[in-house]
Amino acid sequence: MEKVPMTLRGEQKLREELEVLLKRRPLISAAIAEARELGDLKENAEYHAAREEQGICEAQIRDIEYKLSVAQVIDVTKMENTGKIIFGTTVTLIDMDTDEEARYQIVGEDEANIKAGRISVSSPIARGLIGKLEGDEVIISTPGGDKDYEIDKVEYI
Image (cartoon, rainbow, N blue to C red; front, side):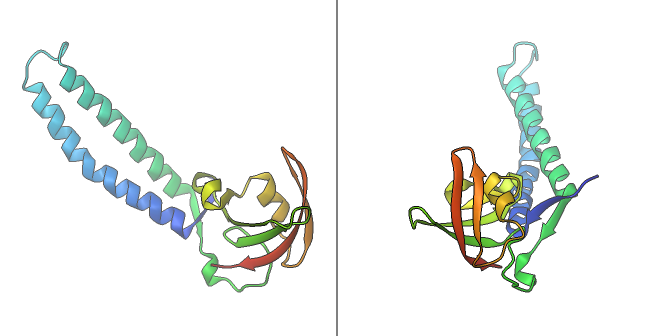
């Protein structure tokens, strides 16, 4: 089984989500029992809705448990800051053409959220940055064309 990188924050978020789902389990079971008491199961909408909710909840629990079982949690705050870009680091880039600044944290696939500044380790930008050092200039091939960046800052936060 191949391990999948995940940040400490990503693991905590998954564990919180799992806890919520596990607390819903008995409530769903109670709803199914209540609906069963209403009579004929063939035409019992409450029963079918509760069973469907149970199926969705169980699938989500299995999915999260699997993700946690294959996760390799990487906590960059415990690593020495060498200025080298690795999984979990936060990078500040300066676009050489527009002088615009962009700040990204390189995270696992499930944690990625571009609006929050978290990019997947498998994204074109992250792949182009991994292994580079603070102060380097890099050209990154993106779907929108090549972009020229200067790595302004690498943070292990």
